[in-house]
Length: 157
Ligand code: HEC
Image (cartoon, rainbow, N blue to C red):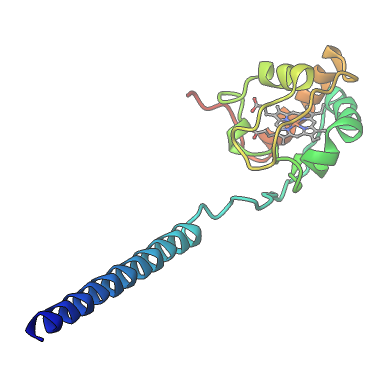
């Protein structure tokens, strides 16, 4: 009789232990879920969002005017009117692209070979082989004159 009692006791204790384990697992999962939620809520604000800027018009040189029409034909679909950005590509009238951080070479390379996504969440820029080096030179004039009119000037890095 006494022996039976202990066995029942043992079984009851084992059951309790199992219940505790399950409760701990549930709590653990809930805590993990909460942490994931916090991480999601604190993700960088610009992720997945298009950045566009207001661009002041510039008094363009003749070269830059030629560059503007080349830009419209080849770059504007992603980089936006006046290079102000769209949800497909970043604004080039942006301090990141000041000549000290992205020299003219960056423009020649971007057009010839494309750009791997690194500064923004838009994905890669595909190469633009239809645009010649001379064309890129004119586009650069256009971008640099617009940048200057918007206070974006050379900064050493
Ligand atoms: C299909 C969309 C698309 C087109 C068309 C496009 N670009 Fe881009 N471009 C991008 C994206 C997206 C990036 C940003 C990549 C990153 O840094 O994450 C970019 C980045 C750049 C950069 C920065 C390069 C670097 O080194 O970081 C330059 C310069 C540039 N583009 C110039 C141009 C020019 C000039 C044209 C037209 C001849 C053009 N792009 C056409 C999508 C495009």
